[in-house]
Length: 308
Image (cartoon, rainbow, N blue to C red; front, top):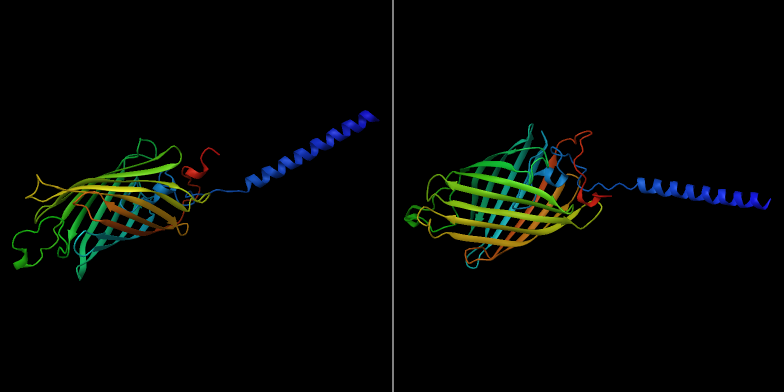
């Protein structure tokens, strides 16, 4: 009898432990961490890189086919002397099959009491491979800008005779970029853009430089808030100053907050580090993804869920 009682007790303990383990497993399975994987993936890319606009000064990779991104961008430049410069840009981008993408944008400027349209741009991009097939996921970007308004704030020295003739019109210009993007240490998300821009007429301004940003999520599990550092360097010359360039370098904090599944607000405050740089640059971007999610289409897991 004593042996039967001991065996019965052991069996009861094992049964209770098994029931408790199943209950804990059920609770664990009910917790779903989505991060930014709840938006449609572009060729296997995580959600952050599937919306192309990575930060106020950087863009990355491509949109999924027939997905749209609508973005409103504000840039405010405060200088050591003189009034600030305000630029408002509206952008509409569409993803195409085979890792292509196209976009159109228009920019308006407000400076020293005057304002109006500045440029209209057409853009195209092409990712060289599906996500993570090539290190740093290189993407080619080209843009053509049509000048449609007067130059209200000269980046370089004004051309001779401007006071008599009035401000010149914005010249047409072309720009090419190499877009790089990668996730490091399963935690840090990084993007860098190298660019070259040249005006076709006028003082033939030329701009060479790079912008990069690195961020990490701090509000888990939904990755609702990301913070990091952003920087931009530009070497600017005109046809008469090729040997005496303006070197502009700004750096500062950046943050991105997901206001909903498809909308995001980003802000960056960058501080000038050279005599040619603005004293402070402030960026604000509101972006909205449009288009249905891809059924059964899953990208890589968000950084907050890796190795779980």
